[in-house]
Structure formats: C-alpha cells, structure tokens
Image (tube, rainbow, N blue to C red):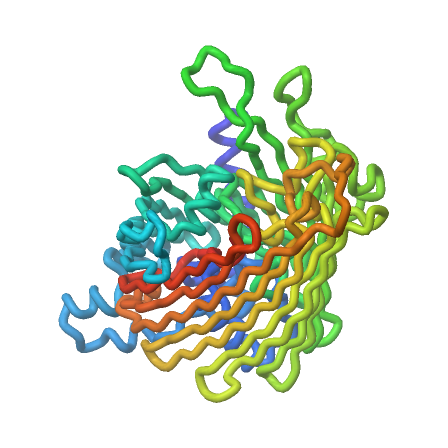
Length: 523
C-alpha cells in the first residue's frame, strides 16, 4: 500500500468517526485575554451547565456553548453600510461555505504616554507601545480548525520595565528583545495551532502558544505570563463531560547558548515539559483538578539529547512517583478547586507542590462575583509561595522558559494580594486592578538561585514591596478582536537602591486589541 493510499484511507476512517454539525464556528478556542474568558465564564454560569471545566485555558467554546463575545456581531451589522460594517462589526476578510471558513483580521495595539512621576534621566523619553499584527482563523470541514497570528512590536517603556529587560534580556511575556533606536526595544511573537476534533469528546492539537491552569488571575502551576512555546496536546472527556483529561508536551528553552558551532549564532540550550491535567465535576457547582508537570533535561556534558522515554508516558502521577519532584527532571504537582453558587459567585483555591520535602510550596485563595450589579465583575485573590519555588539545583532545569517562571511571574518567597473590578456595558468597558506584592530580597525569591547554595546572612532577608494601581477604560471599535479606543493610567511604588522608593505615574492613550494578556504588574 502506498503512502498516499494509506493517508487517504486513514482520513476516511477518521471522518467516519465525526460528530455531525457539532462544530460550526471557525473559533474553537476562546482567546486567553481576560475580557474574553470572563465573558464566557459568566455566560456558562448563567446557563447552569451540568459540567463546567474552567481551570484549563484557553477555554473550549464548544464546551461552554459560548465564544466569549460580548457583542452580538452578525445581527448588529445588518443594515449598516459596507464600510461601517467592516470597521465596527465584521471580519476584514470573511470567506465561508458549508465546508470551510476563513477569516482575517488586523491587530493593532498602539498607545503612547508619559511617566510624569519620573524625574530622572528617563524623564525625557516619550513612552509608547507600537504592536501590529494579523489574526487568521479558519475551518476545513466540520472537524479541522486552524489559527495563526503574528505580532511585531517596538516600544519605549517606563524605567521599571527597562530594569526588568536589562536584567533578564526579555520583555515580559514576549521573549527576547533587541535594541530599537537609543532607548527602545524591538521584539516579535507568533502563535498558531491546528486542531482536529474526530469526536465530540476528543481534541487533538499541535501548535505554538500559551496555556493557563487555574481559576485565578495568577497561576502558581502554569501561567500564560511567560513566552510562547511549540506544543502538542490531546484532550479527552468522559461521563457526559464530567471528567476531562489532557496531556501536553512542550518544547522549552533557556537563554544559555550551546557551544559555538559552524553557524554565526549558536542555538540556546533546550529543555522540554510534560503537563498532565485531570478535571472532575462531581456536582455542577464543584470542580476539582489534579496537575502534574515535569521539566525534562535535554542537555548535559555530551551535548543536546532527546528527553527520557518517560516523557512519552501520558499518565498523571507516573513521573512523580518514579523519580520524585526534585530530581534532574524537575517536577511540580498541583491541585485546583472551585465552588460555584447562585449562578454568579465562585470561590477558588490552588496548591502548588514544588518540593514538599523542602517545604517549597505555593497557595492561592480567591473569590469572584460575576454581575454583582449588571455588568460589574469583582475578583479578589491572595497568592503566596515559599523560598526557592521554581528554582532547581540543576541550573538548566529551573521551572522557567526564556528567563521567566512558568508559574507566578514574580518567582518565589512572596505574598501578593490582587483586586480587580471590571465593568462592561455594550461597547464600553472599564477595569481597575490593584496589586500589593511583598517579596524577599534574598536568594529565596530568585528562581535562578540554587536552593542548595550556602547563603550567609546575619539577619532575615529584607522584603521589597511593590504596589501598583492600573486603571483603564475603553470603547470597543471592532468586536472581532475587541479592539478599543483606550485611556489608562499605571501608578506604582517600587524599591530601588537601599531603602529608596521610586514612583511611576504612567498616563497613556491609544488603540488596543484584546487577545493576549499583558502582565506588567510584578517587576
């Protein structure tokens, strides 16, 4: 049998396993941005679905019976001029038939402003963020979905973000940077995935992107705050969707170079990760999830090598039981819980076990209210982690990707309180967010430190405290990407040399799309 005939027959068999017209939209996954996920979660709670799995993101629109859209697009566009419909309702390009769909949208995230509290040398800089991109989504048949996006960015940032970039060589969430003119940064990011859904309860995916495990604004286990990575993922649901199980394999990297070879620029030393997640809803109002991840070693004295064969075992708990959590293949175990009631309230908690033997643990407790009054959502959250969470005595095996922790972006040895209020009414939205983060200035708060190192100190390590207030409001121009005309303000107090406190009062105005979350509230 030729390869072509084999592929043809295999495709025919998989199509016979289909599930009819279940998937009609080209957008199978809800964007990670909080505006989309909050809307989808609120709708799902009001619908009182018998089984909800809200901790694993991106969320699946076919499970929630919602795409997270806050505006009814198609009916609203009816009767409008073609120009106005394209500008304020429709996709830029929209090609669809019974057997396929293809949409294309521009993405613009551009704003400019000033830090009026900066009296230093940086005060002369005009701050801006200029990101342009494209979002392409589509469907072939009723079971194959695809999505790809690309973002190119130039920016000049406040001094606290500049200090972060100078230390780690990256822009938060967007990876490595290069210099732009005298005091700016230039960087790019691309995401993509191809998803095949052979049956209603099976989702197979390959791509490059981000994931978030947890109900909170932060995740101590695996967050979308770090850079994108290539991955393959399989997800299954059983017992009328009351139980779901997913396994993900991701290719990660450090920013430490391989030995110089024949190419002008040597590659970075690699590592990889396996993530397994089991979610169960014994009652429509209760959700519990078990999490395991392993960071697999890919480089040693012999050079780059394949991960252990154990990385191919997709069973939760096997790796941790076989080798523990603090071996050269660094591990993390976790627990998610959520209790939902009255169709609008949610209590949630998370536990992260990096190394229980060494008391390297993290905890999260939170409370959410959807539509406290019409259009107003409230969230309050507490996060804490002990010393050396995400660190490893094996320098390449830190629980990190491209110089950022895979969990909470601040690292370890901290206590944090977050409060968020979101208001939305038709196309208008507003958000107020408060962060209060206290973190040790010793090595326990540094995910790059060696937990087995010898650290001498006469007194307890002092704490640094960062307080930040973010206020934004906007009016949605284009609902397909939630592109809005936005005004915002960031106020921050943060420690510098000695006991001195620096301040940021960053005022800005611009046009912003809402697809990926930007985390600038922990540096």
